Length: 256
Image 1 (cartoon, rainbow, N blue to C red):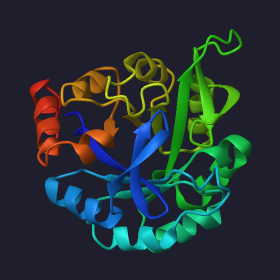
Image 2 (image 1 turned 180 degrees about the horizontal axis):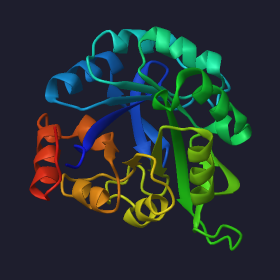
Image 3 (image 1 turned 135 degrees about the vertical axis):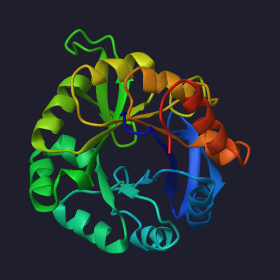
């Protein structure tokens, strides 16, 4: 029997508040992370992802006190990312109540940190967060480039090659976010999902572009094991999580 598709609200946090924009710009306030986490837990979310969206670009650590208060309110798996640079950062997040840690910029800068974290805590606690954008650079065979610092910097890295390497080093999941689709509500980049899925068997979380419940089954059909969204849940009707699960189930995919 296939594993149930996980539906994951994402809390993009800046200065202690949940924010959301389009293509990582023009951020607007979406509420208090603790209150939203409590609401999504009660509404049936399968997991929560908490991303401190300016930690890397501001060269600072994740807001640990907000993580602690959020973890105290939820009883579902909590992944935290943003500013994670070392195994010690992961240890601190786990002590604050996180179940998994997400790493992005630091892993691109020094891939060996993946090995170190996986060796110390196991692959199950480590998520590679990957912000990718389409490119016409002929040196990037897949057509998708890895970016860092909240999509602000190109790296010249091929997203597919990076996923393969990170999986080989020990990441337990890949959170694949389309910079081009992020916040647009125009639908997931199914071509990107399909391309990355063909390159690795590590569980894949699709992110970026969800605009309606019917977008979610398309991402699963393309190969996503879990689907993540922010704007649709923050600014949509209170029963949006239920609507999404109904749409995924109606398409023939198991849900919790």
